[in-house]
Length: 375
Image 1 (cartoon, rainbow, N blue to C red):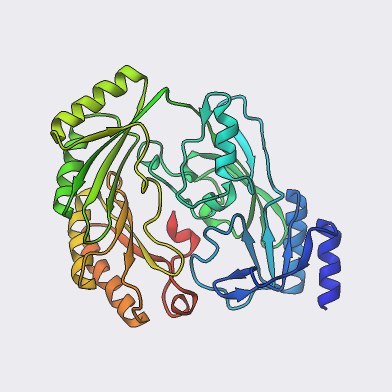
Image 2 (cartoon, rainbow, N blue to C red; image 1 turned 120 degrees about the horizontal axis):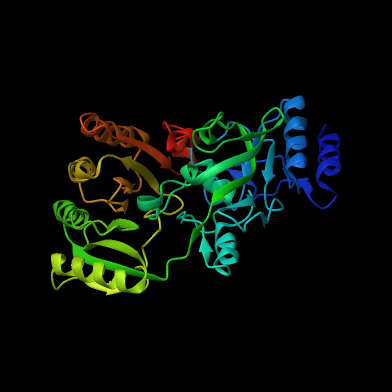
């Protein structure tokens, strides 16, 4: 069985691109049996068709930055590595078609040579286009441009059965959130690079101060590209606004916000070190909270009370989507109690909370967010 499966994978992917899994080939603490690295969409589809015929479990892997999100698999037979699904084409007009395994940073570097960009900035280091779309991973620019799924015109993918299909963006059928298989390429909208960028920041100490600063920024009609908050727990935090456009417009809007926020405001040409980064690391218990911006204050205070201390929190204050890190070492029961408590606060505010990451043993005891829950 083992030899025949490996031989079949080699026939599909090539002799150097199918192998038995190594110790690093894990998902949620579960080691895979084999790794297949297809070079084309049809090869990816053939790999999934082979797995379906033999009743084998499959998980796609790009850079691996989000491989441990969600519920750990009960078993894992094949990891489909998308590293050879790499490249960009048809990128002269308003869109670019990109292979799923291409790092987002590589796409941005290539488009920048033409004075253009994708208006996406997923926080995961090394995120690939396929990995970003699989969980609709949005960064600060989502405030102005919307989520990656919302900027996608079409996606090609291999179904779990091995059939090749195409969908029409976020609202097509099936939508990206409904894909059960491996994304192989996507056509995304392209935008001009802004001539100037400016970050305007102001320190904060409390969630109430965050709410006030965000309200002031929104009231000025500044057309911000992003409004982000970083609250590192007990330490002083920051609210920062990204302004983009021609130099004179950016100068004027930045000066207007600085006047409203007063002399404590800082203006810089590069984002702060925390900008566009998750507040959690591997091994942390991280939750995503989504609520209207005016509800973030109440939720943040509730989270502090439930945990017994302020917790690190970071994300889009302008959209009301943030990630928080729960205290280390909590048993599953306590994590569930905290999540339930936050849910009660969110009920009246139309929000939701999901656990996106946790150590594998703990994740197995929790209700974890699945990809469709992140859209």
